[in-house]
Length: 145
Image 1: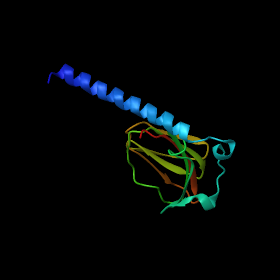
Image 2: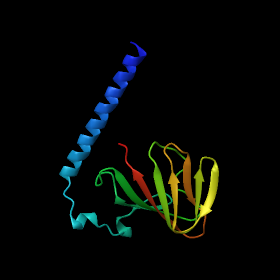
Image 3: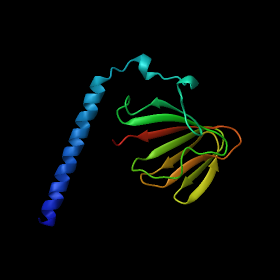
Image 4: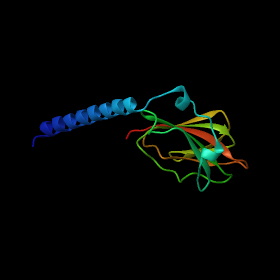
């Protein structure tokens, strides 16, 4: 097969996938009835998920939102949710309480409350608790499915 034909075929497949994804998103939105009751989410510790290093609480997960997620993580002193990693989705962290050690592509910085941290797609990144109190932060991410 000629390179131009292969390229055209690949583009056609990508367009079909995007169309299918858009249709799936519209169908999902039609299935969920969004109300004031389910669009307001107040943090409740008893509804949080216990992890090895603290808790996480989903304010908006991929099963409710159309493509974005919002999670709060609470990490105990000296711990991290996982080792530095990378993924195709971009990601934001917003520090609410405590001190965070933020790793991005080989460099590290320690930051405090009211600081946002951006992770570009495919960048190696990680966050850990650099303080002696719980670290509380929000994670905002787009679900690529």
